Length: 94
Image (cartoon, rainbow, N blue to C red; front, side, top):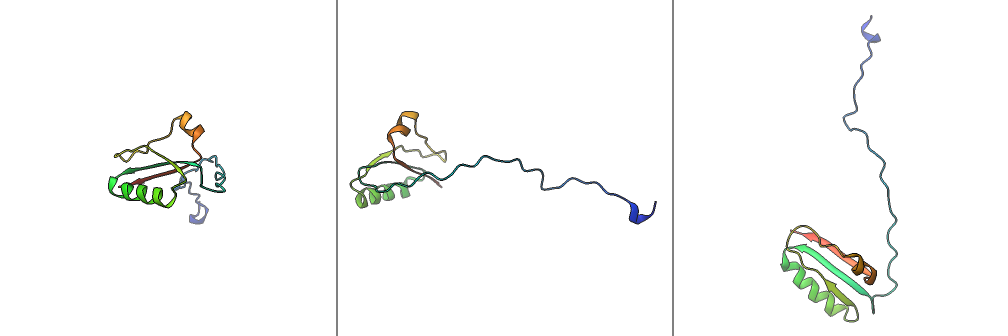
């Protein structure tokens, strides 16, 4: 067998990517007045205190709800809270 006739078989180092299910973006709110927005940013309280005050001052007609967590794990809404909440601001900072 000549050198040029050799066949090498190997695996792709990238691997095989399985298909994932995608979801469309949620519809945007037409206005914020009178809406209930849940605010949950985990981690350092320094930024959350200032941001919470700023949002409440800039949007006084919004009903703000909040769950505090000082761990890097986000606090999720219960099924009942999801039914009564119009939007969510969820973030992680450290």
